[in-house]
Length: 350
Ligand code: R5P
Picture 1 (cartoon, rainbow, N blue to C red):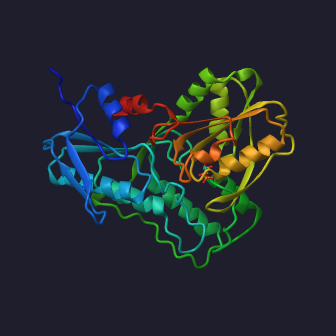
Picture 2: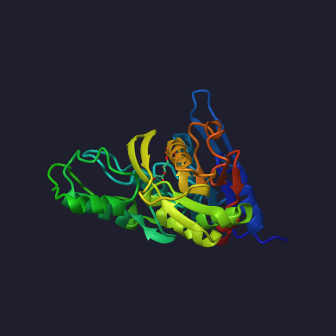
Picture 3: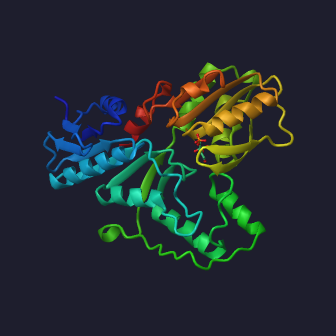
């Protein structure tokens, strides 16, 4: 007889991966009913008995509805007496909104995570966009530190055109110019339930290496160069190049708006007749990849293959046809090109 250590529930956004995780763990999938009312409100019913049980909920949050569904499931599990709740969010939306670039902006990543944290004992994420490393992080500190930095260095509304992504780059930007804080109005003491006031831990798993290993088997590394589409993606690209055994480089990206970026190659980039593998943590609109591919082709790349962990593909994947020679992502989000399975990585952690 199989000893039941945990009940794994799947939200409707992660049915495939949850089934695989349950299989890895040799544990049952919890019975749950999720449906929508005609006005699009979400109905949830937990059918399995969860009283005094360890529960795991797996739900990628790509849309607002995915987030609401997750919150409803978690609250119901608490109401029904679950003993311990691990929330696994293979992909979490809003992770790129972890800072205030302009005065008054919401740090939406914090908002979402606080809500999830209120009903979870443990939160697990895969390649969380604002965390560069894997491990367990008190992201309350991340949010506070980020805000403290701005408080000291930032003049409101000076940030509309900063290069994409990473905090290091922003720090360097500020080192060059001495801004000061005046009217942003921070109040950064995180308020989350009970004793967790200033604690909000995320366990960040790495699927980038699995993506790299996929390409190690699929591509010939002799003529290959891994390219990061911006400096924020460089560390991951470097790691992947180490796995594959090839060179790496990066492009310079400046984000103009949600779907418009300007990409420039570094001066010494020599990719003539090279096979290029562009690797990023996520593809959202696809603007970054489309623009990078265009630039790399104009620099003489022979072939262009693209890989990422999270394939959000808000504009669909058809836009890549004829633009790149190959496109692969992991199954943190189920897509037509989710060829890298991360269920084993999640199963090992829970
Ligand atoms: C940015 O920092 C990320 O790593 C991705 O490069 C970015 O989110 C991709 O967005 P999009 O596909 O909309 O250009």
